[in-house]
Image 1: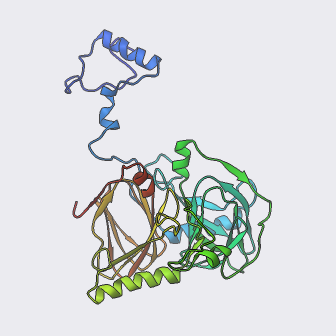
Image 2: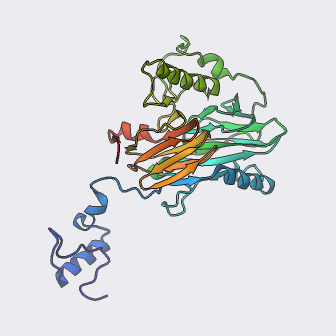
Image 3: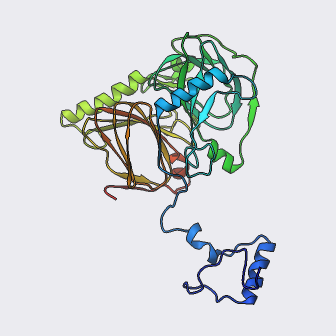
Length: 369
């Protein structure tokens, strides 16, 4: 190394406010490295950009391909202690091979063969399941068996024991969403094994949580005070579908209710607070009429969208993809995003918005780029 070289990345000497290279400056920079110090003036452009520069890339994963790979995994990979789950995570191409859909969100396809059990465990990461197709699996959360069917959103709040059992003659796959990357980055993860078998192999049509909580606008008086995660373990498709249809019917009657022409949306909420279903994850369902489009939107924080039904096109920044049933789309922070429907198009969306709202760091911009 010459006297003017330094492991500290130097700014251009003619850049505003930058020092002139010299042997003394080189020695100073070597001392910075020896003491594990980094001068702000060489890093400020990366640390404090004028707008977000996410490492995550806009990307689309094809459900048909994911399902085919999951089926092969079902033939070759057992479910049991050690691996715990036959879950295959989406790895964003901008995140260096980490199994993260975005810097804060995990998304995976989980696959369970007929009469298989996924063992019981718990973790501090918050989780949900969203079902694009199929039925026959019950997820058991703290002993409460909850049926999983097409279009349902199922919750597994952090630190709840949970396992899954497939009581049908057919395999089943679904989307898992968790805040694993965020919890990992914060160094706050805990994990604990549960019993070696699913504690409750019952197959009720309605879980205990639904019987107590899933009555629109009604809250049991016996349950007082807010709780951080929603106590409703299952948000059923028939209610979601009816709510979206009602918004579009109102639009046709000239009444307000939709977020944009031809675009209805609902947010899954915690009945004890009116806020998000999980402290770190927002979940929504969107319906876009054929030939309609969403307003172009960019926001601080990231999201993942999954096509529930229909076909359309998604535009992220300067790139565009055609999407169909089951396809998954990663939307990085501050990347302009637009959906255009070719047919009536239903999409499930989850995001890290509660984190940024809690930090007073959320920002939204709508309209053309």
